[in-house]
Length: 156
Figure 1 (tube, rainbow, N blue to C red):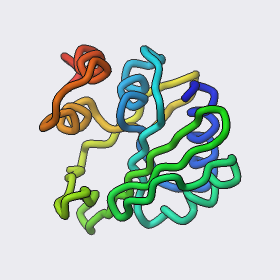
Figure 2 (figure 1 turned 180 degrees about the horizontal axis):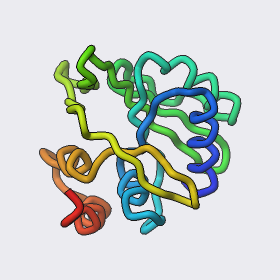
Figure 3 (figure 1 turned 60 degrees about the horizontal axis):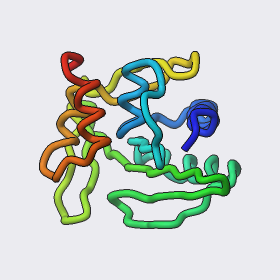
C-alpha cells in the first residue's frame, strides 16, 4: 500500500465526515510523521455508525470486499496492490469504544486513545502510541511488529 493511496483514502473519508483513526503500521507512521517501512494494507478503526458510508466511498475508489468477518473486520482490495482493513468500533454514551473480535470477545478503545499525527503533509487521525502498544500484545511478534514497537518506545 503506497503513501499516495493512503492519502487518497484518508482524504475521501474525511470528506464524508466519517470518524476514523489510522491504526496498525500506518498508524505508527502517522505518529512518527513519515513512512518508515512498506505496508501491505491500511488498517482503519472506524465509527461503526458510518460503516456503510465508508464502504460506499471506498467502492468509488475501486475497492471491493474481499474478506468479510463483520462485525470484527472487513477487508477491501483494489487494483494496484491496495488493501484497506476496516475495524468497526461501536461507541457508548461516554465515548468508550468496542470492536468485536473473531472469538466473540472485544477490543476496547478507551476515551483518550485517539489522537492525530501527520503524514504526507496532512493532519491525520490515529490511535495513540499507548493504544497501538496494547494491540501488539498477545501474539507472536513479526519483524514488522518489532520495528513498530521500536518506533513506539517512549511515545506512550
